[in-house]
Length: 480
Image (cartoon, rainbow, N blue to C red; front, side, top):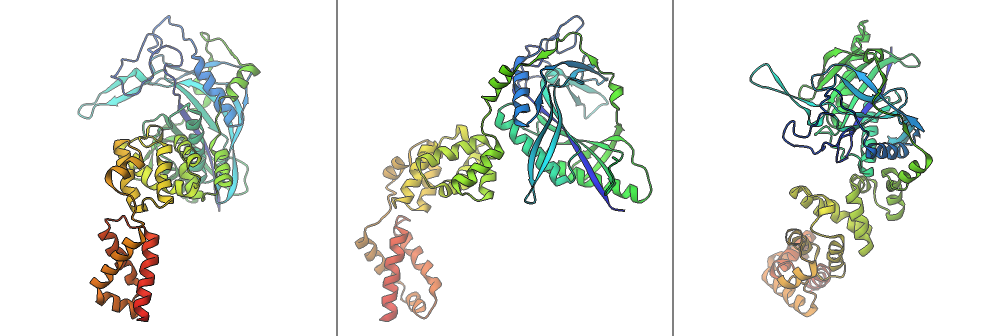
């Protein structure tokens, strides 16, 4: 029997607010344990939560960006379960009245567009963090993260392959990063994903028994975990065994999923409306105000870059992967209108230096205007491409302009035809054996002669002029 996978993703995006969702404690990552806490986020008796308006703003923005319907009235609910890092003994989340529902994201898979529906987006608080002692059987609890605001994005079970799941997750991450509501860091857990997966016979409409996968901290791990789990479930079904509904952890080192606990049912959480929080009423004016703050999103930018700049798909994918990198590219093109040349330099020289120094494009010491000036110097023949790379490295480390570095270091390209003719004649006279071999048909020696000329001019000779003059000289030698 042939089976197909049915996959749905539950994604948690940690929001970039300065304070927590129901109190004024800082959300800053990396603070000393249990320093960003107060009676509210520690769940002390008698305290009252107050909703952070910015969390609602961010939820509305994401709802608009993912084509969701926004509820005019939504409210918070208590989700009851015990975890040692959840101090209240319940989580404040949303249940029957989430802030947004019935949206979708389009992803391209193998040249075809797949629409993945979004069932709901809701606001909730994060739990704390357990730190396990490696030397003795005990754990410590850091409540700094307790109360940090989250948006949970729940997809419909529309995903059929692990590849589709990874592409949907990447598209969603790109959206939250472009909106500026989440940094999208999967390794630090600020953007994390649980996957529900089941198998059913092809053609069947009935869903199989699902398992929930956790602990996947990269797009690649999401894809690998789903691939393994699909193989595991298929093997069980082919042996006539039953699938157990459970939560399983992904072990990236071993490449396997491991059973963790029986999966809770919805009724196990005993949801009920939180009596301490009033309903949230969202009018059209609030939605329109948020709509005006939404930037051009990745799919729109992808289409425009292809139409406006004529760049290859590979270039576009890298450029739009970071909103600040895409902005840097467009700013440079405004000063130097050669999109492909700009793209080549950004994707090679600039990204190498940014990665080496762990710097973002928005903080790059080489401004788009200064990079454009450097490319102009190459384009008009003032310096060679090889020299330009040396100039760029100094621009990056010193912050100086390209023209100033070229002038200070005397790097201007040698374009004096008389001087170049003299140097080329000297090279030809100094290498009679190579000239004779060239004349007998070893045309690859052209590179040898060019190298010798560049060596004598310290790389400053104009390559175009060198090739023209050298070709004529060697042609004359052949005829002679």
